[in-house]
Length: 269
Image 1 (cartoon, rainbow, N blue to C red):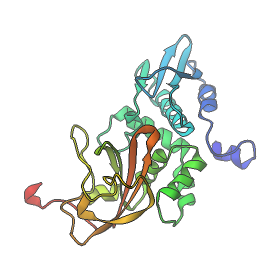
Image 2: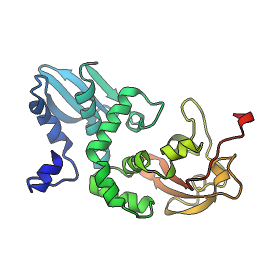
Image 3: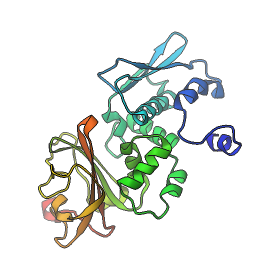
């Protein structure tokens, strides 16, 4: 529908006006429990929420979010809950970590809401056409984020979710990995981190652990074994980094060669 409206000149294609869709979508399906409001609210304990009110639902997002991109993704995430899950529960309260449940092992409802949000805001066909055969780095992903009106983190997560290349996205705080997401190829090659319930320190020698380098959008060569101890000692990956001072974290993108497998030997698994 959005593609058709854009083609007819009735609306710009990107960024998607999530609030407008949320307020009108119930009429498209003839539902009697519409979203009656999309509002910023002082809900500091979580990023966004969806709650029943008399006659419908209200979609709220944290009024402390400073990024339009994060607001848009949060709205789209809650819209996903409305479309997919409103018959299962009468309220949803979602944290910032619920916004990155894109891979295996995540909570099912949050994973589905994230998948909906990313597909609505960053359709794969448009994303593929934008990156084409470009070398992927944080500069290129930043251009994608600008077009789609999302955060760099959301754009990077979306690329990792569909790429055929071996890549791992890592968010770190205070010298430790907070969460990471691996592409399908990376997971098949053993390049992933089990962060849930574990404390994983950034490896010495990595760009991520280098406090003297705040950002390196294009990346530098780093031995693959720096990040994955069982990798071939001759293998090299490209590590990119960008510091997000406003939120107190760093984002790293590890781009491995597709053939590099980093599994430990069978007897140690």
